Image (tube, rainbow, N blue to C red):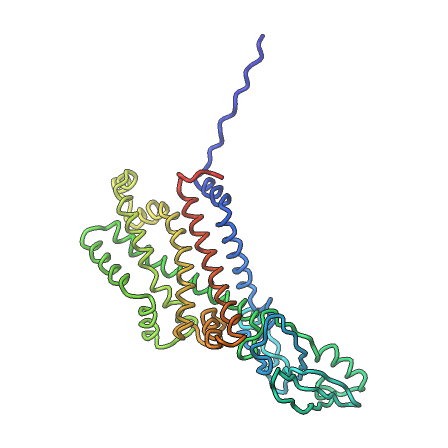
Length: 390
């Protein structure tokens, strides 16, 4: 008796989401962009917990060390503060707003101990006039009395430190690396809030216009056209004047309110074609409420285009915020906005420090925006059924 012929089992049924994920995972540029975005998001979430300078806004500036190049090392003498600024704070406060400075920091070029006195030579920048040595009682440095040998050991271990500024310092003597890392929180925060606001308004307006049609569609399309024709910067200025203030939260809302038109146009165009489909007609015949028909049956079909436009708006919001901060209309000092940092470096162009103080935040903006654009292109291809699997 002949052996039965083996047959291949039926191919497993895959959902559309499976093929979207496979196309996205096979797109190397999109995955590189996603990895960089994830890294920036991790830095933004950790915030002050991973910064070399964890003071509020990374604003601990030492004027003596201003405009130093990347890799600069300095010896710092830390003196105890006499007021209540050095109060302890909870982990949540340190994560949200940073840790208030616990010491008064003085850059020094050298030091020695003579009896019960610490003699410190102030840091001398290139071309600066030499200053006379400063004398501190050992108990003044440590904040308590004790044997001279014990106080000296404590000073060496806790009050005299070597600090490396890996990306140099700005014109106020602040750590450039700390401010760049903290700037990711502002850029990603503004991008996220702008995308959420634009999606909320754009989906609502576009869905109403596309599904209702008629005079309501013409009216809302006219509103979208008028808003579309106004430059984004002018809208932000008008919104800032309406709020009567400039600052981080005003920038968040203002940027978000300028980007909903893109979403509304996409949603309207998609619904104009979807509302004539058979499943929509079946829903109407069954007497489904319009709101349920929109939320449960129509809008889920727009998930792909909305994700793609959200990544595009994220990148556009970061660029818009950087431009506004560069002009002084967005985030205000001393908050470490990348656009504001580019402006500070731009004012120093022509000097040795101006190059890296402009280049570093500019490079951070470019890399983050490029990552969102690469991810957006990858998502667009992933949601296209015609794109072959890698």
